[in-house]
Length: 246
Image 1: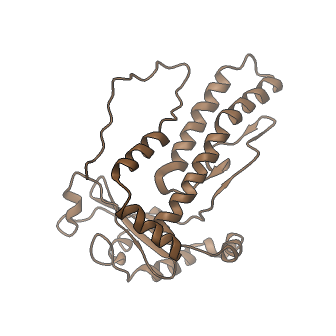
Image 2: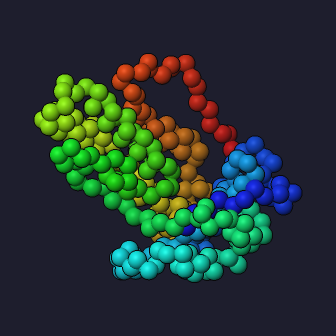
């Protein structure tokens, strides 16, 4: 569940005055996770998460009654008394969130084998569902759009054969990369949010003993894949990227 609260008083939440973005997250008991992040306009975006077993996930996914407003209130009550990582309780920011700014979704991981049929093509979550950790889902959705647009731009005509050929090129250019990103996202999700003993040990090793230089090197390698729009001027290469020394 995700929500965006109304603007808060910076005196109550000093992090609102800082130039950097805070993203504190709590991995609690009973497979619960919650966090709060400062966003522009003195607002706070909050997230509540409940990890499910495979049997629980299959049952919940097909029960429509669990996705109405009433079920939102049930989930909120389970988290409202927990301490907010930015201070106070989670209820302090949840109560200041209009209902139309609260969204509840069922997160799952899957890369579909079929991305197109006839004149219909899939992009983003419709083709590949990735966990939000690391922003892989959003980035790959953008890349889908750019690659597909390039393939359509190169079509010789609008015949069914040309359309199918464009979709085949789109799939062949991006599916392998998406699969690699899916594997990385899956591993990262387990390390950052997993609650088994092995996952907790991996998390401790990752944050306490792995050097930051390795993080930077892996980050640069993961984001080297950058699609560009074929009919627009290429991006200038004189830009530089800096990383935090913390």
